[in-house]
Length: 213
Image (cartoon, rainbow, N blue to C red; front, side):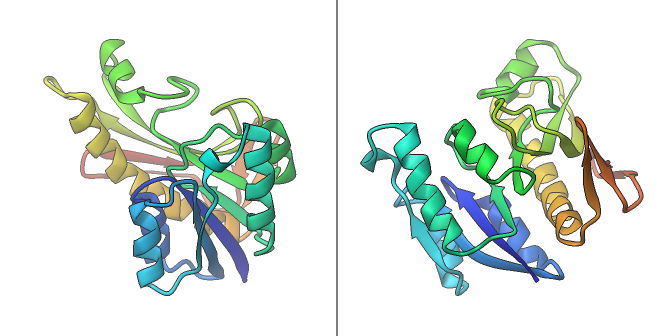
């Protein structure tokens, strides 16, 4: 059984997708937020999951916050730490501490549009597709080895909000599968590439093209 700690900052819809997937061999050890009023904490608690808050406002700098967060996480001895809408930039020390067992989902087709405001930036750039990426986390923001990606069309008349909703649906599809692949031992990092012992798959679900690699 692989123990997973999930970090969130808001309603935690990606966390919910992972929990609801009931992944074989996975135990959700805790859901932790940097926001005391995060709606996702209440959702997790209602389902009997252990929850905790480490409020970043209580610490003088990122280093102190990350050190405190690591102490809370490590109390659960996780095999995987999952960033599911966790809206904090993590220090290099944090990333090294969880090297190869820290996964993030980002709302763009990396390496395009790292950072924030990804949907509006994709629209402004004239892109015809957008999407999301599940990747291992490294000290360089949104640049770790890619596990899976999903692409959705950018439609005429799209706003950042309408595109975000379409991308979020794709996130809910690929994140649970990526976690399941980690738990099953299917993933291997080879330099900047992730090899998946489960066969690579490309398939269409509605308006979403899912690529697991």
